[in-house]
Amino acid sequence: MFNLPVFVGIDYHTNTIQVCVMDAQRKILANQSEPNDPEAIFRLVAPFSNNVFVAIEASTGVANFAEKLITQYHWHVELAHPGYAGMTIF
Image (cartoon, rainbow, N blue to C red; front, side, top):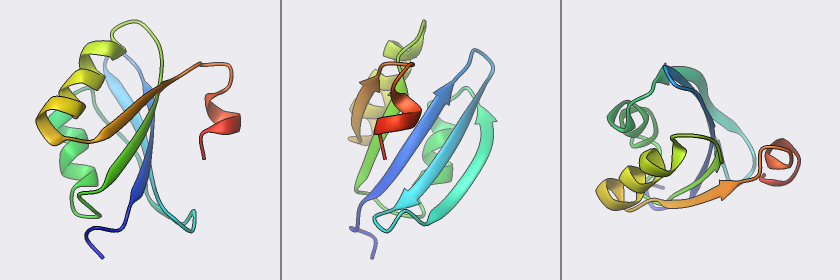
């Protein structure tokens, strides 16, 4: 089960980040606010899978955050247009 994919939606803000983790059947595994810190997001998501697909709303500051998720944790990260993120990602 550890290799089964999970899908992570991130609503990025300067101080906190809302994180929603779902499995392939769209069951919500976690949905909570975390500090704006890649390590905090990793600690939340890692127990569910190492096969992680992230959609993060494109905004100021998010590129560096996304790069850390890609380089440190080897997650699949896509930036999403803020106007469409809630409608089309999952």
